[in-house]
Length: 291
Image (tube, rainbow, N blue to C red; front, side, top):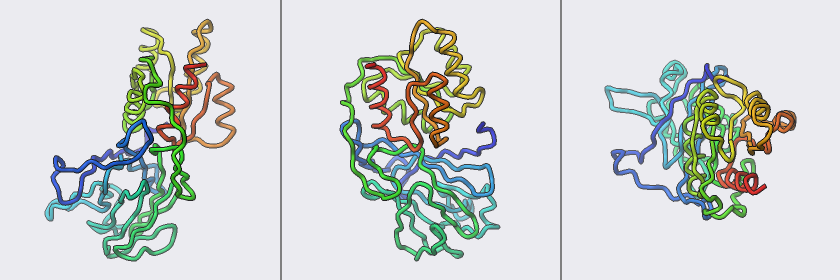
């Protein structure tokens, strides 16, 4: 369940410019698209809270100060930022050459990456699973959606893999069941650009209403949904429609062979682990529909 998760979805902008003047960032994702956003999460260590954002250009991390007109894109104020020594303008998250970087802005109590102190104004590579420490506030960095499957999150090398043609779909209806609005929106963008008709449902109740109204050609779903476990939903659909095999792809942050085995045993056709790449998703959907 995600009921205890605090989600602060932010809309990034180029610092110093009003939002309307934000320049578009070019990010290569193969022939599918050149500007699909990443989705990353900062889990507050020791709590159940998560700060989530779509990465676009560069984002200020710190705490809000209305009097001095400081409004960080990643505002850590709700997490006792002041008591934890987080500066108003503490650090920047940057995108360069398909990679994420963090840069300390000369903060009072410093920024640490995996325990090592970051020098002010120096850029340090940020990877999936890293731990950031702003003052005394510890954050785990997790990627939910990345542009290309070739993003080797531990080594940092980007080698885009072959991608299904943008017109792989022929208007087939794909139902995405995802309670995370950022992830659902990126999935919708990617699949629509690949030629599919996409409907996003944020919970099982809405998804089942759509299924009973008009069965989709394929279903993409998360494991952890607010009103039902994803595996129970897979079993239910298989039981209710034994005469029609609708491909179902499970996308989940739950890692390990055990979760994959459970999903396949429940009746899912494929299991994709988060962080998932948009081209990996498109290829999986294309392959499942063809079968």
